[in-house]
Length: 52
Image (cartoon, rainbow, N blue to C red; front, side, top):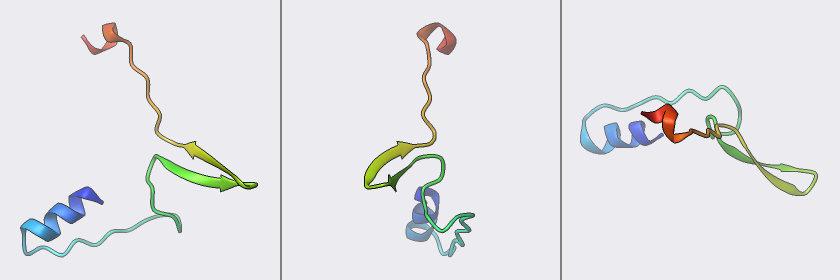
């Protein structure tokens, strides 16, 4: 979404966004499950030594 916004605002390109599901969100999103809001998706954890 950010890339499409940047293309639209900085160039003459008109981006087309195709989403597989009915909800926009990609890897991370908040869903309502039985009246409770749950954060699901792209959670990643890194150790300092892995980043070296």
